Length: 272
Image (cartoon, rainbow, N blue to C red):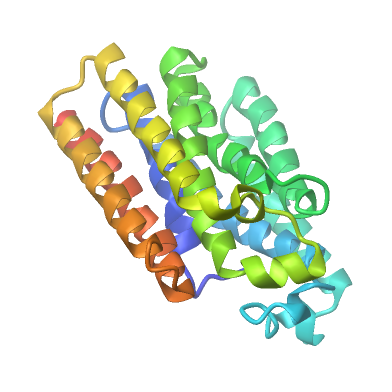
């Protein structure tokens, strides 16, 4: 469940909080906030479990993942599926405390999350599926807070998808050589030598979409300050990537959570 590695949870949490703060135009309802924070931890854990289940036959051939519990046989596939469904049920029980629209959107989110690990066998864009799965928390937050979604919800959704494609491509670049050997697809493989340029384009798209969100909602200096920090961190990540060292690809991936956090903090201070 990777509870000992919280960066993945943060990468899901911060955009979720973007959505909640924008939907409420300030601090969201306490019950909605608690439901979504707990849901983030549960669904990120579920995503890790189903990812390891899907990759149980290939993780042993990848240096970074060969010691994972399913790859080594420490946990059986049946046990992994039991954990996955248990986590999903717990998350669904939380969603039942909201409204019909949120519940409907949650079903799509679960389908995307469950499908993501298997997409790397069929498409070079599994990162886009992950982005959509993660970003579904944003329209869900709007639905839970206001009972509807709108332009701001879907612009923010699109920004989160762009950001996820960018940082998960950095993550995939760590395993690119192993993936090429075993036939696993990813945006890192697809982009080839243009990887850093295309990552930069997706990051520019993320910032641009959030800029539109700010203008549409008449946000103030704190939000744009947070957006400026995000932009600076994206530039720093590009600098790390230019070294072509696997350790720096991973650093760029980890750094992305600070970029997402800066936007949320900008929203928090904007609405104080």
